[in-house]
Image 1 (cartoon, helix red, strand yellow):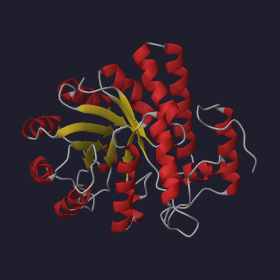
Image 2: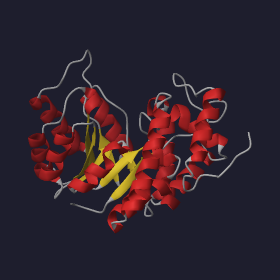
Image 3: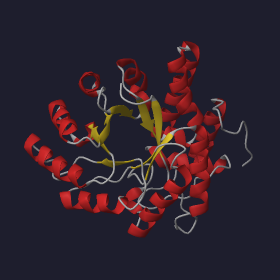
Image 4: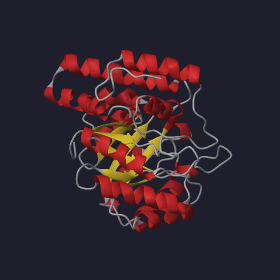
Length: 306
């Protein structure tokens, strides 16, 4: 295994009631993550609502993250899905102006359910990674409808020494185990989403990433620390709670629709969402809040008044 075991959070981006980027709330939120000890990806398309950010806002999101996190925990740019190499090169140029620990590069989405060939993927990544001026993390999301061939990942890792990590968002444990077996000595390997966290750790990977740590970075790190300590009882309890948070939030459509209103209700910085995403209803929030408080999650208030 290359590097340390770790948990990463795909950070939210708070907006105020008028829809503007809320810098003070964002700084407060990042400080919670820093205190919790998790690594942080910022400006992502899901939890970070990255598609809604203007170029200037994206620049501020990255700049503030470096100010608040650099040197204390890992801070990385997540970015958004892309259609063209030009989009990726533009993104890499923008993030190069910030002292990030690493930058993530998405695989291309080619449109109309078209899937890239291995030759197309290799040419795309060679061009993108060669242009990057910072350490690079690659990924494979099952939702794209294709996997990055493991042999291709091996070739890219050999050619480009500044590829430092890879994460997999999917349920194919055979693919995940193959990636870890063949690349864990060269790359940090995480799973995206907590559901394969224990499998990743047990196979010799580094850990996991997800949106759940926005609520409790302490809980995310407790999964890592209890695994390292061989504390099975704490590991089971922590992972059970982490998965309960995951299931609760995906009941209402995924990362931020419930997360942001919940953080607000708990007196923590969450902020508003930007269309087309919309927050859950007040009735749904009552259910989410009640179930969250019953979980007794570290770093989360034991009770609130609404």
